[in-house]
Image (cartoon, rainbow, N blue to C red):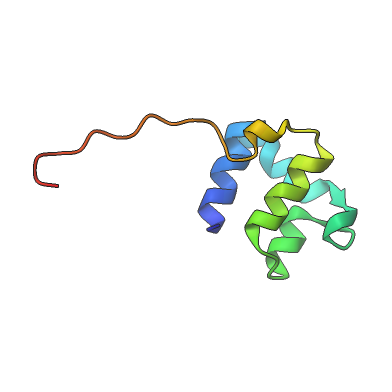
Amino acid sequence: MRLSDFWRLMDDEFGAHYSRSLAGDLVIGELGDRTALDALRAGIDPRRVWEAVCAVQDVPRERWLGRDLKPRARSRAE
């Protein structure tokens, strides 16, 4: 998972402002008693960080992959 995907998932699930606060304040035991931001800075895979946030915040498993997005329309040039 790319870091940009991590932030998109965080923003979609928790909102743009709260996701930043949550990532910087919530200490997660599964990440070595680090915040999500500290874990990402330490080089922990963003997917592992995302899943740890989901688990501790009781996000239903069906939302761990993010919300369904409509595929973008393809142009004739593609």
